[in-house]
Image 1 (cartoon, rainbow, N blue to C red):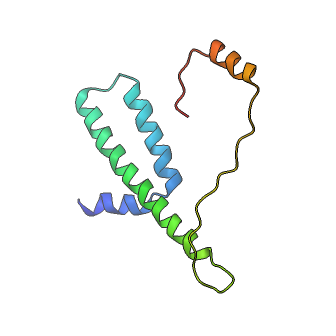
Image 2: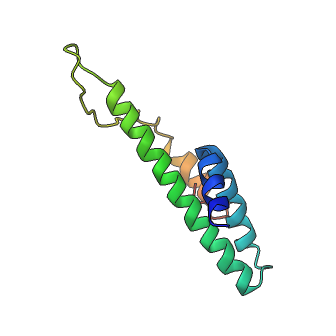
Length: 105
């Protein structure tokens, strides 16, 4: 039985793991699961988080290998996000006043 979870972990890609993690969060937030099921879902979620972290670390390593200078030596570059365009101050105030829902993302 211990080989079955390992096979599933290796079969999941990052996107599948994130999708499953989001489904688990929705189930847990619904308030309809008994405590025992919440614990099982929490454990599964933590395993999925570990998978996602491993996939991201592997992707980062691949990017570092690909990013090479003109001499062919690997170089590590910090990620520089493009700045988001600034919204007008009154537009932000309007959305805060009309939106009572709290969003994490």
